[in-house]
Image (cartoon, rainbow, N blue to C red):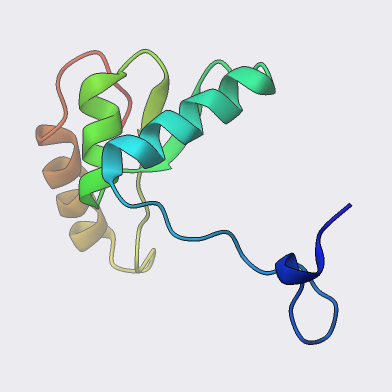
Amino acid sequence: MLAAEDLGCFGAPLPAPPLKSRPQALAVTLHEMDGYRIQKGLIGGSDETSQLALKRHPDRFLPSGAISDPNDVVGSVRAIRRATSVFPSGTFP
């Protein structure tokens, strides 16, 4: 049961405090993945935390990407080529 200081003004739980570092966030994520027996996680590869996860644990995380405009075929192909050229071989962009 939650203590009174853990509840907001309407009785809803307060959000957890933000993690202070990227390695801490990565450690918490891996711990939660292990707790739920998740072997691999699909993550975006655009921010520093994702890049750190992909670099340190390539066996646990797979990068994902998005196409902003599916009607722009040439632009989408160029974006895919740019995204796949930055990942080491053996991973799926």
